[in-house]
Image 1 (cartoon, helix red, strand yellow):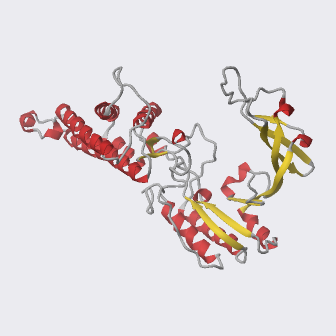
Image 2 (tube, rainbow, N blue to C red):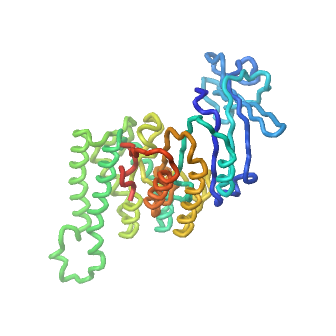
Length: 386
């Protein structure tokens, strides 16, 4: 609506072919507003005199839709009714934009035929162009139940609310250390020599050791909270019918991982703990700190999963380089590169190679000298989530 973009070209990889109709598709968008009295069949917030609408024109077909908040009694939003068809004559057009959907196999030819001229170009590349995986898979393969995962999600999201990348790193490190210390007791589990029971180390007395861990990490968490190295959520989660404090949180966390074996605990550490979005992405209400297991599961996903081989990754880099060189003379003003690590899409075991391949391809395909900047709130910082 700001009019900053007049044309968007989406290049999709061959592995995503089942989600597209043909190698090339063009849709013309018009965007604007319509008045609420054109939507009398819906109950809309009384303060909304105008609501957003847009139309799509493809071939000889034109369809127009309006987006709004539908209310059903007591000002409760009905999330199942947030749009309605609108007559093209009732959508007052403010901006227009063309959207092109093109396969990577046709992209180089398409860009070569385009006459971009001196129009400024914004190039946005997502690392999940190479593949899309489920970050939760290691947890499931280790036979950690979905119920266990959800319980841990809820516990972490209700108590720990890091506000920036530093607090996120400290919160993850705190939980990693709890697990590392708990794992020390597992080296004693196969000891069957009763004669040595009187000489057990503290780690081998699981009851006493658990009590020690609880006391130790309660003190550490209280220090992190008071020192501003992490933040407690505003939600008043209860524990034993009273507001949860640091001691309760540590105890609850230990209780929920105590029945996991050493291998499962190691997998928890590998997956790690992070916020679902960057602090720059959404307001606090939409961000949660939890297991860093991504946004999708095999049984609940909005994307097509694809794990590339190393050979395929190399081939896709060659293809990307060809695409970028096909519009080398374009007036590229800005290049953005998305890691897609928080949502768990980009294959984590290949992300460093993928990222470096893309950076080299962009430099090779640019006629300008590029300066590279890393966002301070990247998951895991510059080096990434490894």
